[in-house]
Length: 343
Length: 166
View 1 (cartoon, rainbow over the protein chains, first blue to last red):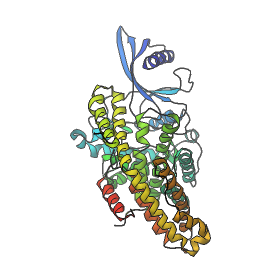
View 2 (view 1 turned 180 degrees about the horizontal axis):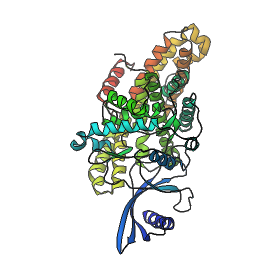
View 3 (view 1 turned 30 degrees about the vertical axis):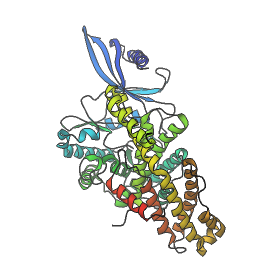
View 4 (view 1 turned 90 degrees about the vertical axis):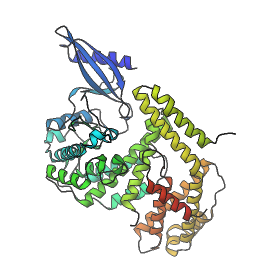
């Protein structure tokens, strides 16, 4: 498979860049994770002035039935857009919606080399010393994302929403997705859905480009603690900027510490940085609503993985694991948000 | 001596992490580590799930019994429906049957919860009671192994189990 992929990618890239001589692709390796979109790292090699040049590339493929309901071009479109507005993102090399080249639609990015993204890396002594620096950037970038004023043309690339009903759109989307995929009746989720419908969030100050999965694990930082790229924009859309905050502070991404989201800086510091960068205020009622919605969204995503296990006999361990552990984690998040233990 | 299934599953998980992972490629390493975690959790479920389902079933029967004696709840749901739900005991103790029986009761409880939330004046005792059951339900089913283990969950679970009807 990897060899076929290397050959097909080389053909494709050579057609795309005819000025690069004797282009070939080697060392194709699938990344662990990114289960909804199988992702590969490879070396692109070509000849220039008698010497071999190399560049790392990352290929994101779109399977027939991805975890999230998206168009093939939403993610690369969001990456391009964020990059145009000065946010750190990988450089896009190609977007191909024709599945005939490698068996599915895909896009190719230039590899951002020498970086880490995981919580495990953040736990090492080297990065422990840098977590204030990384955390500060993480929340500043999110604030900058929220502050971007999109042109009408940019907004038209995403499904339309209105400022006073963006919450209805998101709730409808995740409620539907949860019920399509849940294998069993979970009364806590049904309670959360009722609460979300009956307790609408305040109207946001503005609509923004929402990343949709902004958390530790989805941005790359180098040895100096500089964030080099924000990744995984597949759930990007136009919406309430509080959505990304509600998702990013979820306890799951910095387990078990609730007050230091994603193992980085304290929540109050994070909020102050976000408010300064975005020019907006974090409304506690909005934050709670989007945190609950985030937990329901998480459960919908994990339920979809569970469905893949049950209905498609998935052999990917990540699917087994995700349909149990983070599903349980997000359920506990709902409990903490809606029925906290009396002090 | 025959090892019990949970013991065997634990050993399989250990074999994966100590013998297979070191020999695997980067992608397979991640996949196998994840598999070992899941196998550990399957062992946990094997040991505890039947006990949890049976206790939850009893806890819900108690709530339905109290609701069957409440005029407002009976008017909304029918006295017979609530009385049946209170009386219906478990007969089949296979895991699949336990799961199904608990799910049927959970659905009725969910409807009762929704109704009690919409009519706070009627049967005022009911919503806090079901709120507590929902919280206990989440805690009882929370994994004690895997990436999101937490001492407070283990402690809460033990407290609920010691107070629940056995």
